[in-house]
Length: 118
Ligand SMILES: [Cu+2]
Image (cartoon, rainbow, N blue to C red; front, side, top):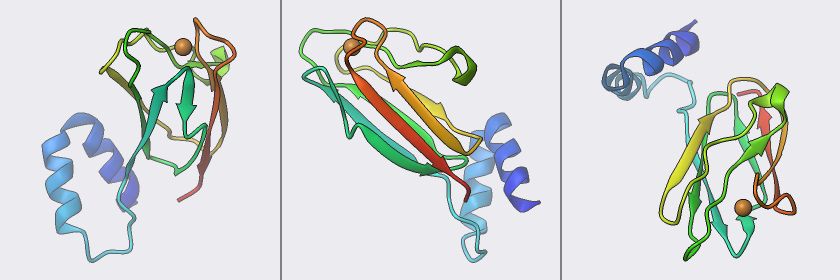
């Protein structure tokens, strides 16, 4: 399948995958996207994002001085490293489903990534 070839290429050789996807723009294959979530005032903004299988979500810490993490259940990937103001962390989602998460040091911070089939 074209889609799985692109995914494999992306993992191994990002430049080649980029060139390939540019060449393939006339085909009905949706490009993988990166969806942004800001972390500010102890909140994930937006708290809920919907993405397609193969998309990446990037969380960026926009606090002045607080570090955060992105904590999924152990079955859904566990916890990111802590990241500091102006740093970001990203993750690609390869299976459809609901991925609720919180912040390791601040359990009251909640968010969810909803991954739908492409
Ligand atoms: Cu936090």
